[in-house]
Length: 252
Image (cartoon, rainbow, N blue to C red; front, top):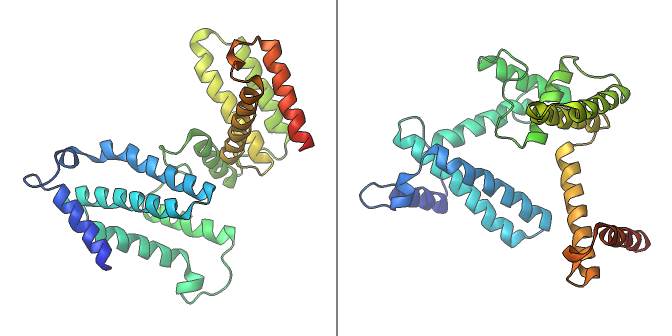
């Protein structure tokens, strides 16, 4: 094991020591640390999006700390330790790449990959196609993964028309829903939208991420054109600024 990784494991053990450690670190549990783990993963992705390698180095360190933190708590509870975590992922990577580490040869295509993962799920006692789709995933991403799992069993629309009609149906149902049913109907609408987007081979999470960035960029541009008093203008004036920003983008 590398010197720095050994050092990091030692630091975490010290921080978690009930007598000599940090009160905050000692008080943490899997449940309280989990939100930080998710946040650090997003910060890694953000650094990659910005192409900031110096920041990425730091964010990867923060994410590694989360792995070390969880492993330390598991070790204290007698479940497993960091070495078990590393061994498990190493074993998995070798098993999932028999064309590299085994004697099978050939090419790893998508079907072969899915067959290997399906065998892993069966070995772990999985009895549903839906097993293994993490509940903590962002909702759009999880919806897409659930739909892809169903599609592997043949439960999917054969063309774009089916999911498009379903989306229109869900829009009508939300419009007609009683107040107590609107949240459920809104969820059905979003799920149907993911299905339609997926039918075109587009990832819903990435598509919405791009739309968010475009909206933010245009909104900031409107604020700039308004000279600091955008919020005080009526909707017609704001809409005029929106159209002007779009015109400038087209001509850029």
